[in-house]
Image 1 (cartoon, protein in one colour):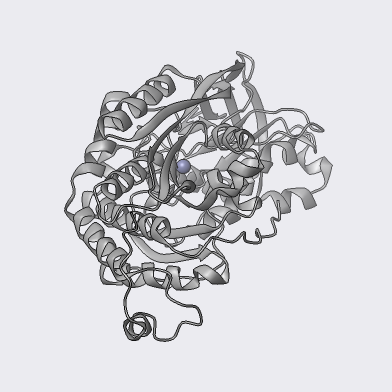
Image 2: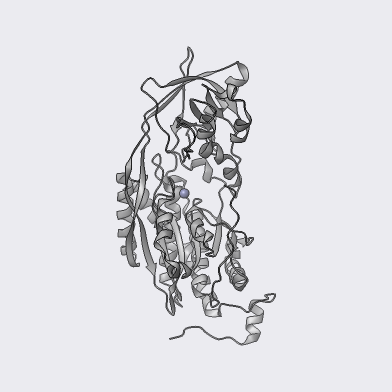
Length: 471
Ligand SMILES: [Zn+2]
């Protein structure tokens, strides 16, 4: 049964007046996409999902009881919503325990700074570490420093993240967190303190992963809240050398098991081809994992569930993957990539990843071949009335779809407004009240329309060239 409706050429030309390629979508698909958009805006499903996940499960850090409860929640909810082929893909995850971090000004006042251990950091002895503070803007400045200025000191990296809609400043500052510990240790530092990689002025510190290099000692690393970093900046400006005292009980445990959770909306005549719609089920341990990435989980699940109810049906299979352990090593997406043989990989038509909060989506980026340029234009036109502008064709996807992009799988990238996201990201303050139902629904509409039209697209998706990665 072929459900596409053939339109006379003149109507096709009206639909795509300036296209160099023939329209690859029929009018029935575009009408379905418009109904899907409007249904998403009125739906209460996505908010109900993130409310349920944050209330019944809460934080879902890799390998914890919360992580296991999250996997069970996802499997149960996908079943309840009528997804097909609901299954777990086992994933081995590293296991790290935060413990308690105490950071004080080591003087008569013994004032506390609000600090959290960075993910993967080693702890200290019970007595802790005392040292003079030496400040640098960032890792690049630290790497220029003389060893004599770093050795035996506690290094403080003070560069501040800027508030931007596209969140681009995160990429500029996050090297302080990721690479700072080993860069400091390689010059003999005894501990690292960073200004939180976050845009808020609240007294919450932002955690996140570090990467120890094998050629440097492992030193403890913590982040302090922005107001505490401001105070440390003032102390450094006003006296010669402040001293700090750090005690941290962070430690590593043996690896354990978690799972990616997968559910599908089967396609019709192209069911073996996959449109992958994803977010990550894990979160950091401090908050409720509401914006990061409960919102993305809800966007992916609600969008696919709305698609399941739409006519005409998706021709390709819409596969929802809720990845394990994005935050602390991309274990889930690496396991997913490793599970694909060449044929299964080739069957992936396109990926869409939601992992920047609740939205709204303000732009549709892509990384597709010329055959899909008209598809991207048509998606954007359906979404233009809800504020989605055209984007470039240089999308890089999110962290969990990067391995698929490297293998040439095309990307559809509805871009989420990250203006407020980095106020709460990776903090104890990432809680349900930060999720706005209207923003969330607009994002569901954007992801649903993009995934649906990709699943209705007539032209075959060609492989694309992955971006050159600098790190
Ligand atoms: Zn995330």
